[in-house]
Image (cartoon, rainbow, N blue to C red; front, top):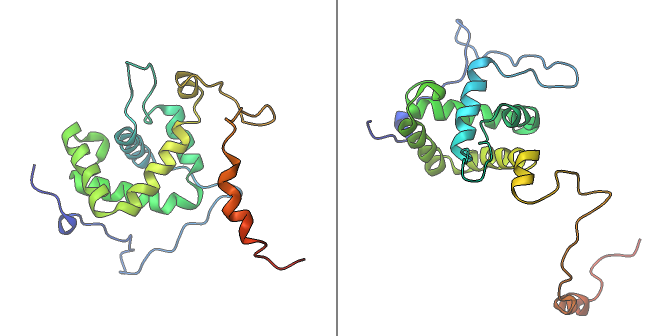
Length: 176
């Protein structure tokens, strides 16, 4: 596979035949439009780069259907960055990410981390957030798959003396 660098990754803005940028599509009331099938396949392939399945621990990868659907639903304000990350990954891989061999996918993932670290971090954070709230993953970590409230989780009592320098500073705000 040829070397991949930022000059070899063509990512273009969608334009209409007249050469103008296409206007953004209207959003459905209360939700984002679902991703097209090719973007969903790319999302699953990219998510598997972040968290692959583990037979040893008996957990799915982030490309699991339920986790991928959660990633798509949760993207929200990061949706544009997720779609841009997927486009750059596919360009780096030389075609549709889901159809590329594992070596090309991994090389594309490395390219994104090295050349677009903020984009890669945004995508990875979204994948981690959705992955680690999956019930199967929570159980594999020995945690009860539930919301933290109202039962809460017990937290080890820390050393409160560490706050003394903060208390010694006095009040830093104006009274109400």
